[in-house]
Structure formats: C-alpha cells, structure tokens
Length: 79
Image (spheres, rainbow, N blue to C red):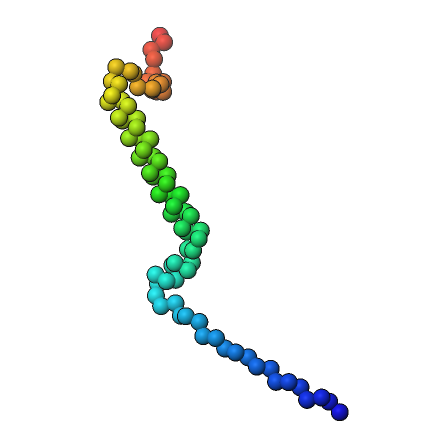
C-alpha cells in the first residue's frame, strides 16, 4: 500500500510585457550601454576642455611659438 502523495501546486506569475521598441533597446543596452555612452560623453567633454585650454593659452601668450614640429614632407634640393 502506498501513502497518499501530496499534490504539487504551481503558481503562475504574469510578468510585465515589453511594450515597444524603446523598451527593447533599453533592456538590450542595459548597464553596458550606459557605461559606453558615459565614457563617450566624458571623452568629448575632456577633448573640448583640452582644446579650449590650448586656444585660450595661445591667445593669452601670442609671443610664444606654438609647439609644432615640421613633418619634413617638402622635398629639399640636394643637387
């Protein structure tokens, strides 16, 4: 003789459905996308600050030569 088995109860929980393309993109990008966008924005901001500093510094001190070096692309006449 077998002992009566207890029934297995399964609870089904309905989840929120993704409603549109924007929600799908947010779900797909997630944390990695947020870090990437933040890094790109920080890079652009840092580049703007550095370029602005160099321009302001060049205007304030025009007597100093710019820190440039010739590339040597023009041919020299060795004849």
